[in-house]
Length: 127
Image (cartoon, rainbow, N blue to C red; front, side, top):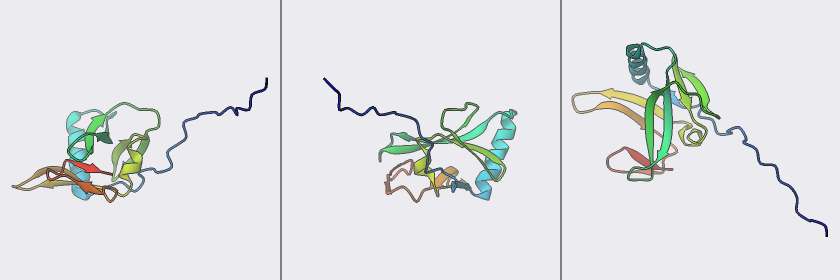
């Protein structure tokens, strides 16, 4: 009896859609650098991630991280160390992270051309 099955090798390919066009506004870069300086550690980077959840199905996460995960994409944007995981990378190409500090609103916002819709609260999107 002979087998007609062809063996298939499964490998982890590098991410083709890198978030190399992810950007920070000047205001966001200044704020992130100030927050990093407050932490007083030189091993932290801004991790930008997309996770399932929120009203529309996906939500952003921004946090400082010292970890290096398999497939991470390391970037330096306006002298800010940024890292994006390989699953989030396709969703973040062309996105712009801004920081707003007004009497009505304070915080980071993400303008993402890959988001096909969002929710009223502005904290989630669908891709």
